[in-house]
Amino acid sequence: MKNGIFLPVILALGFGFTGLSCSDDDDNATKIYSLDVTVTLPEEISATDIGDLNFTATNAQTAAAYNLSIDAESSLTATFENLPAGTYTVKVEAEVSADSKLSGSASVQLYNDESITIDLNEVMASTLIFKEIYVSSYSYYFKDMYWEIVNNSDEVQYLDQCIIGHMDYTSSTSTAVWVDENGNSLEKYPLLDYVLAFPGNGTDYPLQPGESVVIAQDATDHSAVYDVCPDLSNADWEAYLTSSSYTDTDYPTDNMTVIYDVNASFYFCSGAFGQGIILAKLPEGVNATDYAANSENIMTMPNSSSTTPFLMIPRQYVLDAVQIADEDDVAAGELSQRSVLERDDAGYTWAYAWSGQCIRRKAINIENGRVYYQDTNNSTEDFLVNQPLTPGVAPTSIDAD
Image (cartoon, rainbow, N blue to C red; front, top):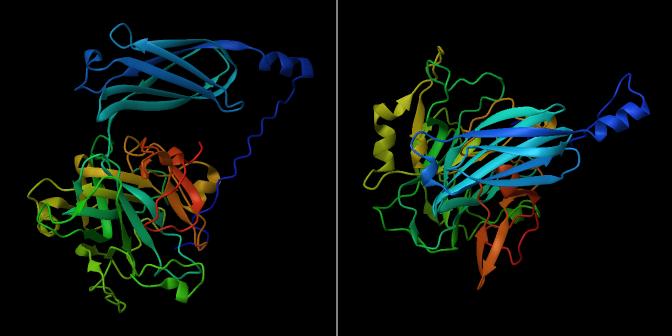
């Protein structure tokens, strides 16, 4: 782990105008332009399957937002008239059903009349999601990390055979490596190091609506070591590792099943090195250990001489994916290499390294004491960064945007 692997973003937007007089500058600032935004739908979805297309263009300099809605059956192109010059992020959404929507976004420099095209992808509403991720640890301690999963739906969900793991760490290169022969991103996620799964035969571990479970690196009271560290003695599950090169302690709580441990040498550090982290649910009747032992689910890196095997998880099995950025990406304000497909997480999140702080999902509604969490498949918007550690504790108020 690099020192300071999670850093806060401080974006200084500086705009220099060389060779322009004050009157030229003022004139440019008042210019307005039109922007045509055309969307493309996924092959399996037609305009008759959706209602309105909702467009939002947000000016990066002023934060002003401009909204348009059009009937998809009438047109797939919306025109923003009279937008002030500037840099814009354009987002488009449309509801497909109660459980899914279409979403897409793009950026554009608007200093002339412009036209852009945005590909929309279907986003399914997740049932089980990460509520809190604590991988920044404290003072190089490692042992106090934890992951909290919440049932964000209104129906009971089962943890049985759900998988948690992280992707290959590839942010050291700007070239995508997990692609097919045509350069397209694979519809599978490569998991490395330790991959854990909940045991059970399908209905052994129910999770009621609004309830959560905490997976501890070590299920003990770490505040006895450092005051800022969490007390995880009441954690629901533990990442007890029996194949590591260090001696792990089996604390008195339920153990996750280690289904894969290639290239694993010490702690279950899922997400701690800036990788994407996923929660996946295998199809009914599929045992996670058997799945990981099947050579058809193993793959080496494409177009590479590397012989390191990765456990591949098809995208359709993923319940939640969170892109965690490393220090260089956060300082630059953008990812040099994405491990999570943009349709599964359009943004990224982070926390200070060794700070004893976590990443927590925003609470957007509380009904009769039950908390609902924001899940737009954009971690930049969905998570609060550098938060106090509250494993197993639900927020008591709604988080402001």
